[in-house]
Amino acid sequence: MYLLAILLAYSLERTLEITRNLHWRRIILRWQHWQVSNTKLEGWRQNDLGYVLWAIIPALLIGFVLLLLDNVLLTFVVSTAGLLSAIQAPAARVAYKAYLQAVQDEDGAEQAKQLKHLQQASGRAEAAPVEHLILWIHLRHYFAVMIYFVLLGVAGALVYATLRDMRHNKSPRWQVVHQIIDWLPTRLMTLGFLLVGNFSKAAATWLNSVGNKPQNNFIALTKVAELADDLTAPTTTALVKRNFLLYIVFVALLTIGGWL
Image 1: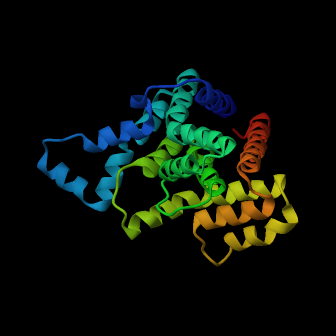
Image 2 (image 1 turned 30 degrees about the horizontal axis):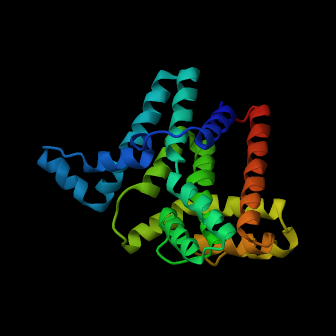
C-alpha cells in the first residue's frame, strides 16, 4: 500500500494541477487563522507549544480516524491524497522551468529574477546557487515527505508538512525545530547520493555530518552532493532522480519482504 500510494501521488503531482485550496500549506494556514470564541483556548494557542499542537491537530486527526476505521482502501485513498497535497511545489516548478528557458535564451536578468523566485519557493533567506536550491526544494517537498510517510504513515508525512509550511516567526526556536525535522531526511538523502554518485569522495563528509559535529542541514546536503557529483542544473536534477528511484526500490523491497 505504501509503495502504491507513493507512486500514484508523485505521478499525479507531475501530471495533475490541483487547486491551491487543496494544497496542505493552504489548509494549514486557514486552520491557523480560524478564530475560536473560547478565551482560554485562544490564550493557549498563543504560547509556543500550544501554537504547534494546534497546527498539527488536522494531521493527527486524520491519522486517528484512519487507525480507528482500519480500512485498507480508505487508508490508501487518504494516504495518496495526503501525499499529493503535501508535496505540492508549483511555484518552484514554474520558476525552474522559466530559469532554464532564460539560460537557453542567455537572458541574465530573467535568470536572476527566476533564481530569486526559486529562493523564495525554497524558504531560504540567503541567496544560493540554483543547484543548491533545487536540492533543498526536493528534500523538503518530496524526499522528506516520503521518508516520514514510510516511517510514520500519512499522519507523520502531514505533521512534517505542517511544521514545514505553517506560518511562524523567525525565532531561533523555529530554526531548531526545522533543524530537527530535516535532520534525518537530509542524512538519508545524502546517503543515497553516496550510493548513486561518487562514494569515495563523499563518504568522509557524510560520516562527519552524522557524527559529533552538528551541521546545518542545508550545508550538509549541498556539501555531500557537490562531492558525489559535478553539480549543474541538469546534473542535479538527474542526481535527485537517481536517488529517489533508489529509495523507491528500497521501499519496494521492504514491501515484498512484508515489512511495510
